[in-house]
Image (cartoon, rainbow, N blue to C red; front, side, top):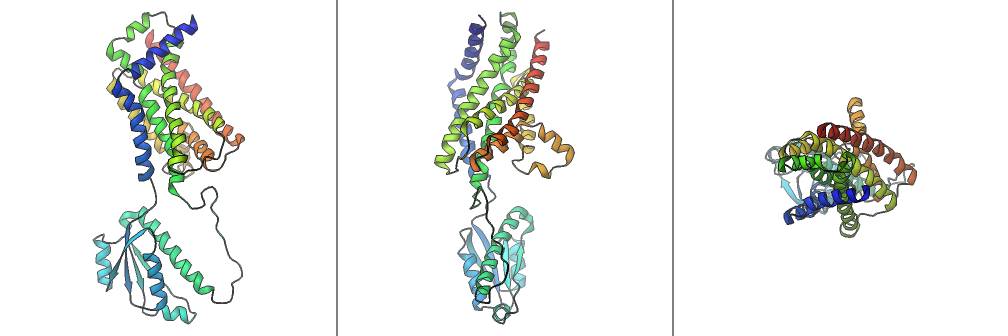
Amino acid sequence: MIGARLRAIIVKELWAILRDPKARITLVVPPLLQLFLFGFASTLEVSSIRVGVLNMDNGAYSREVIQRIAGSPNVARIVALRSDAELRQAIDRQQVIAAVRFDATFSADIAAGRGATLGAIYDGRRSNAAQIVSGYIERIAGEVGASVSARAPPVVGQSIVTHWFNPNLTYLWFVMPALIVIIAAVSALSVVSQSVARERELGTFDQLMVSPLRTYEILIGKMVPPVVIGLANVTLFVLLIPTVFGVPLTGSLLLFYIALLFYLLALTGIGMLISTLSQTQQQAFLGMFLATVPLIILSGYASPVDNMPDWLRIIAYANPPTWFLNISEGVFLKAMPASAILANTWPLVIIAGVSIAAASMLFRSRME
């Protein structure tokens, strides 16, 4: 009888979500759109940039630097400048994001072995992009400097930089595993936060109260569909990300799905708390939005958790996406070992237990 009642409430909840064709579309199409749109928009790469050049030297070495800047795939156009005033005006009017200035003795100083200084001015109003463009120009200048020093006697001591797990620093490799965490959180919370509020708004909550279903059966019935839908969406992402976006999947899928299950349960407990506290679906939607933004910001998706103040870091450690983000990036990019996955999974187990227990107590008190 317990199995039959559970099956009945689970089928009823799934049917309530899937019976509307528009609702079925909304469960699949928006997450896919978010995956593709955010995958290409959430990137720190700066491309199609315009760089101004004030060349007062016209020597061989300044021309080599300019040619390498122009040949960069991130540079769309080189803007020739004739004076310092024109350089300032180009930056002020945002005609260029950066301007490079060569003194009249630039090439002569390099040829004489005295070394030369390359001047660069950046638009600080676009600070993040300017810092990235600064890295591009510094790397190009460093390559020219290395080619010049190669003609001189070898220098003792060199550093070789190797990037582990993402050798080419491809931003899609960083972004796509993180988007699994963010989109799964948004879709799971949006489904479960509406469940109890929808019953209240439609007037069917009283029918649940007088039904032979026990409280825990109602809770399980309402929590299973969001978990199933979340597993289906993430499975679709796991198939698309390596095949379409070329992000390697190097770790254990079995351990990934075990962690994913507890992650979805933790989110479901939070969503059930929101839904139980809400009287209408509009309140539930606003509550879901109120919870989603801190979940994303504190997850480490935009900025590392280690950079946060100590008191905020404590809150971040109680945030489910914080832990699953480590797992997702680790499984995709660096073949995270089982011990590391389990070290990030047991906090999800605790968060899931606490949130579901709190939702159960609140739901029971509301039913009574």
